[in-house]
Image (cartoon, rainbow, N blue to C red; front, side, top):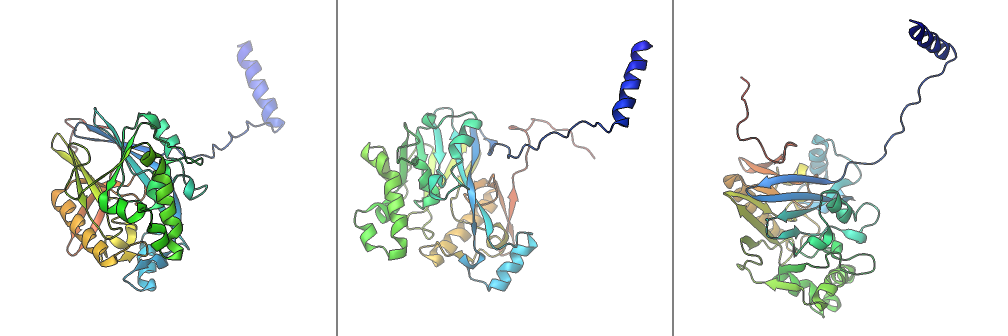
Length: 326
């Protein structure tokens, strides 16, 4: 009774004097950028490397007013459209394979998060034994090296399509390139150089499989050697389609819209339509390097258009039987 009275009196004094408990400080950081998905017996981990903002003017094939109206429907009508840099780690149980490496140190403060997010996800960069590049644009290859141009994935062999390597890595490529494009060729060459020097950069022809059990398909257009990779395990598949799509709000409803980064826009449009159609028919999982993180989902056909159906957050593996509430 005495203790209770003392507590009550203490509370009354505190309230009377205006003393209140301080609010906790805001954390000020985002959750680690990784997302896990089971595909058959494979473990797929999406890794967020960062983002940048792209101008709507880069999208070609509709008027700017039409494009901005489509962006506004998704409530992302801003001066620059936030565009993610996603990479994907596949643990097959025998190999640890990374698909693309993000923008690394090449973009600035908004990118270069891949290694930290990989560690947060439970892996170390030196555990990666294979890197598959969908193409050699800077936001896919810069993560291969650190700011000192040393390899980030010290034990990995890097693979790219022969057509892609021939376009970017030919010693004469920089001299032949338009002036404005020269820096991008140099970045591709510098990023792959340590792996080339160590004999750990390899190419493959169209129709060849760089890794047993992985189906590589040339989908040229965005670049001459743009490649998709399909992994299949226990009857389930996941397709890594790189840069076949850049914008969620526009290019599913209008796959005929290209982007200024395409080397051959008409070929890129053809590749996009073909891959979207096949993915919608097969209902396979797909990933994209620049869709909102984690960039994993399904593609549904809607007449001549398509719809992106993003993966839902949930358990790593769904329960075998889930009660149906009716």
